[in-house]
Length: 177
Ligand SMILES: [Zn+2]
Image (cartoon, rainbow, N blue to C red; front, top):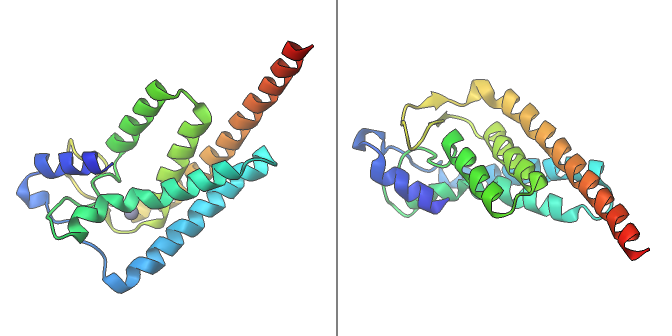
């Protein structure tokens, strides 16, 4: 993600390098909101999957919050674009890499859920096609859609993991017999 952010900093025209951080005193509240929604989404997966689903909760929680690591350069005083990794290009690239590396649909759904969950909590401007385009759009009108998408992906993640675990259990029993 930070590599992606650096890439955006290199590609962006200087007019787009206007990303800043929110006022310091509001950061903890925003992170708490992200953490809370990440936890809710993880709990949705857990509710579907049942016992043993805690890693899903943890992963969703961490991924939802960590997307904001793309603000780090601005926080350290570098000019960057607004929310470089809050981008469809980023999530598609991240999903592609994950698919190639681990091929686990439940993990990919958790990633999609966390990403949309994060955007449902954020407000203000984002560049959905960063770093291909730095056209900024208001995020607010899409927040409900992102929230719905996040919950649906969290449900699907729990379901996929459940189906896979159950079929592995069956396969294991047959193998042992
Ligand atoms: Zn954010």
